[in-house]
Image 1: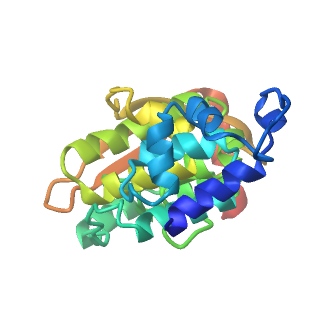
Image 2 (image 1 turned 180 degrees about the vertical axis):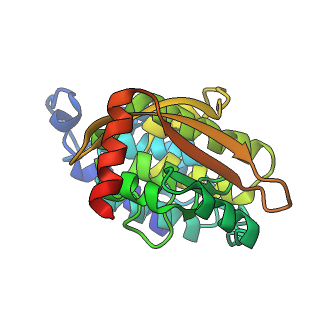
Length: 270
């Protein structure tokens, strides 16, 4: 048994049938779930689950691990630990590249866009540079709290995203579709992030990633700001020429109320 198999078995034996809506029944030889019960909940075969628990299969797909994490009702911390165990076992093999720097001329363009909320991101959704206007919009949501913000990781991994985006399901669809498009075109960082989110976010991400939708790159997003209420923002995604594979996304008010709220936010900040 390897570390991954031991963790899965320990969690299976620690969760009771009642916790997943199953009858306890008499004559149970294990205090937790039987293999057959967990396999049925996760949509895998008993034989495959047995191989995983005994360490005979060390390369499960992220989708399978995500389904098991969902079935075991793992916490966010347990999911992160599970993801690390999968990586340690060699299942994640995508090549992750460091973000390529934003060109000085593109940074100068961002400066000229002030006070418009705008940012530059790479194919996997890492935010690489942004305007002060975007900081005013996004900082209260928690998106910019980390050293290396990533839109997809925030949407699927931070509970505050569901409050910040009233249309969370649609935003989640778009972010998963963008990752799928990048991974399908050979972006190793996007593929690695998709594997991570398939485990840490489970089916919330997995079913969207495999859904086959294509990101539109334009539309209207609703943001909920703690001080200025609900904002309706029209956005445009522009591909930045060059080898960096960057995108510039700019937000414009989609109605007069949003325009007034953004003006008030800029006036207060200045």
